[in-house]
Figure 1 (cartoon, one colour):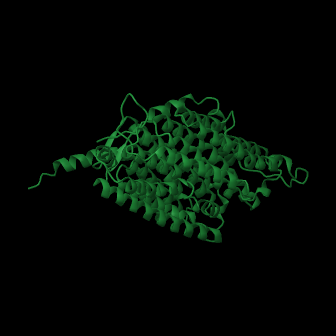
Figure 2 (cartoon, helix red, strand yellow):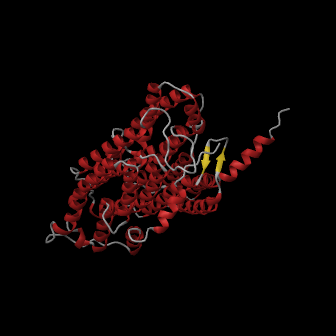
Figure 3 (tube, helix red, strand yellow):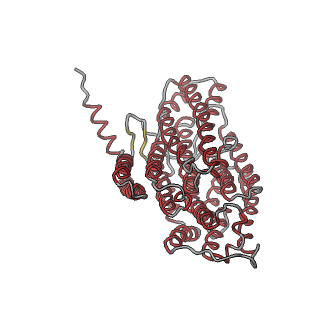
Amino acid sequence: MTDITPFTTHLLQSMQAFVPETALIVTFLLALAADLIWKKQRHISGYMALAGFIVTGFLLVQQQSVTGITFSGMLVIDHFGIFIKWVILLSAMLVVLFSFISGELHQAYTRLGEYYILIVGMVFGMFLLTGASNLVMIYLAIETMSISSYILSGYTKFVRRASEASMKYVIYGAVSSGVMVYGFSLLFGLTGSLQLHDIGAYLQQHSVDNLTLLMAGIMILAGFGYKISAVPFHYWTPDVYEGAPVTITALLSVASKAAGFAAMLRFFRLAFTAPFTAVDADWTVIGSIDWHFVLAVLAVLTMTLGNLVALWQSNMKRMLAYSSIAHAGYMLMAVAVLNDTGVAAILIYFFTYMIMNLGAFLIVQLVADKTGSEDLEAYSGLGYRSPLIGVALTVFLISLTGLPPTAGFIGKLYVFTSVISAGYVWLAIVGVLNSVVSLYYYVRVIRNMYLRDVESQGSKITFTPAVLALVLLLAVPTLILGIWFGPLVDWANLSMAITAFH
């Protein structure tokens, strides 16, 4: 008779490390049950989701000292993954708060139960993707996350562009997943393993066909590029961001992108670079393919196209969509250096990007609810019609540009520093030039708020104290992190090592 004791012991140990994800599963089921029982309570599932996210946060705090592999190497628990999970969790909590005050969601629906339930499911998929260290697990996590996001992007069915956005998202998602899986199959055929660590060990010890390896890498990179909105895999982004509810657009722009970057960094760290050594924080690329150059070219294309096309946008959501593409390019600069310093820079950038980008989307939502428009013209005289909102949006836009004394400046400072330290001065110069370009379309919004149609500015726009408090919750940290950023940097430095357990 087969002894299953080792299996059950490992399973129980894995479940103990899987507690935050288990909390999300329980939250999903409780929110579903609450929505069925209290049908007249529109936000009951939202309250359950928020409570579940808070519990998950407490469990993440307790997991700070836990590291290792779970479920036979399918998932990895390390400080890097926990940092990204915090970005995802905080983004989801803020988006749920945004949803409570969203006029767009309330206009057509008396019940929003499934909306909040799907957000929980999406967060669960992102958590899985953050720690995935197996090719099959990466694919399953992406699909778990994507199914919820496909539905949520078209949730406002009464809006024609929402249905179009959802359909485009599904089509692009299916194609990118298919391409990625084909790349996985090639890599599996070359190495005979699905575990990222074993793939890296095989590639280091054996000679494989470089053309096949390059094809596999490009196909896999296409799948990751789709999730992070990198050029030329970005075509879905503007239409989906414009058609989806503002709340979901905000979640996709931060949390989904964070999960995609986490999976891509873990893949390159474990599969395509040599094992980590304590004396060398640089990653030694396996084989003759220069992944530094491939990623650098991808970064240049992404930030340049994102910024140049954003110049012509008159819709705020589309402008922020192309801005999001450009920011993915800035972060890809740090990925291209393939070292721990670059990872720390990405973590710092993501945390600051979360605050300033969610803040910008919150104000887009508030203005759209009050004026019925997302166009740039709706912001004419906003600085006088609603002074606090005008000042807050100015802070967020300056931060997105990367100017001091805001959090965005600190994020870009560390990214550019990591790139220059690695010897890629030309890449840093391209990044700085792109930041200058981005200043134009961000300042254009500020110009509208304070310099256009000031005399015929229209009636005052007022908001409740709760809404203003939510705006300040994001605006104040955007300024504070531009001056006092030591704790964030320390946290990122503690979390920059992507551990290879085996």
